[in-house]
Picture 1 (tube, rainbow, N blue to C red):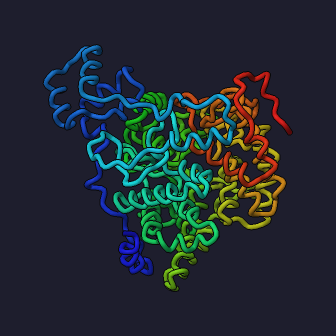
Picture 2 (cartoon, rainbow, N blue to C red):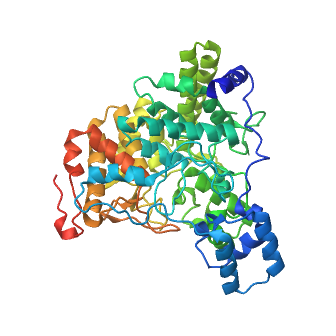
Amino acid sequence: MYRSLLAVLILCACGSEAPPPTASSDPLPPSLAYPELFHRVAKSELYEPKDWVDMTPMRPVAQIEADYLNQSPLAEDELAAFVAANFTPAEYAAREFSLPNDRTLTEHIEALWPLLTRSAQTNQNAGSLLPLPNPYIVPGGRFREVYYWDTYFTMLGLGEEHAELKQDIVDNFATLLERYGRIPNGNRSYYLSRSQPPFFHLMVGLLNEEQPEQAYADYLGSLMIEHAFWTADAADLQPDNAKGRSVAMPDGSILQRYYDDRDVPRDESYRYDVETAEQSNRDHAEVYRDLRAGAESGWDYSSRWFVGEGGLETIQTTAMVPVDLNALLYGLERAIAAGCQFTGDTACAERFTGLASTRKAAINTYLWNEQYYTDYSLGSNAPIDHLTAASLYPLFLRAAEPERAAATLAAAESQLLAPGGILPTLNRSGEQWDAPNGWAPHQWIATSAARNFNQDEFAAEIATRWVRTVSRGFCESGKLTEKYNVIENDEGGGGEYPNQDGFGWTNGVTARFIAEDANLTVYGEIAPANDSNACELPG
């Protein structure tokens, strides 16, 4: 499938960028598929917003919508009865795990993989869920579907015995690219208007870590579709202008930003988005677009996207040129160049090498503030003075200059390194992607960044602190959760929903750290004590 598409796309690669396929036939999100019923329920407090949009209709939604319109207005108890008669409730991915009490941390992670794995789906009428041809892993808890950037970090923990599952996962994402012209935030119809940080090329590389260029060659068509999606609207863009996900910088260099094709409340967070817009003094459509773009970033939400000392109502994601996104796109361009070189297509390799070189220069011109790598504000036309875990992405993708890498690592070590791992930001805003939380993806990005620039001791310190954090939490609760408080060594919190059990990327990164460093194996032998007083860890 991919090689047939490859022939067409490589022909396009040396000319203009191949446009993504049309979205005119994409499945409708619930807010458009049954709008009157959706909005009535979404505005109520009968269900958590995501639980509502994840329900499965028992019959064609057009019939359900027509019956609702015939019966409305309904009292709230009648509305609940109507929903119950027409929709199957969404189950949590794994609210309670039936696992033995005497398992070790390593055994627990291995036992979770089958519990978090979902079978291939062919049912086109499964509500908002988009079917996938192969098995895949969900994060856990309320996250019942595959998530784009989560999956890379989950895959890190899958050993050779899971080679077939890793292949299935990558093929699923290739299918999404071919079908929709993008990898959506998750395999739900309400996620189709946005993507997430483009880690697909790194997932492909995990299929052949010894010779990733061969894997890139096998998926060149898919990688080019991904690149076309992110760089669409770049043609003829004048300096200091933006369109869609593309931004023309003052010198005409093209960088990308997070965006969303819609400017209405998110289906899965409808009530919350309406409340946020009402708290702002801005055009509501603008707020909704920025909330959606924040969700595309994966950092939903963080003071990284806020204005000054303001809160979520000040979010301006689309007014930022993000350092992590552009570093990832640099990595994507290098991967395509390597894949083209492997196939012997010199013209294609030269083109994408040139694109990567141009992007690297722009990153080092605009996404550097003389202290560390950072985001760029389109409002002030200047790099922002905020150190975040995203500052480490140019090091992770090797887009950083050595002296600047050293300065960024020094800043991260002195400011972002907490007792339990790397912080996302220094701010305690109450949002989940701010202090005091720590997240598995940032620990992997930070350790890889340090290793790439020969700071192995710093990398080992990050990994050790993180594995201790996770193993302590496992000892005390018997769980691996979505995020952790890495300052007070406590549960993570903040955001729109409670901390979730599971949890895909925590499992993957933790397992990989333990597998790579013999000094960390002792933590893999920790077992649940369910008593904080009994959880004294070595080291």
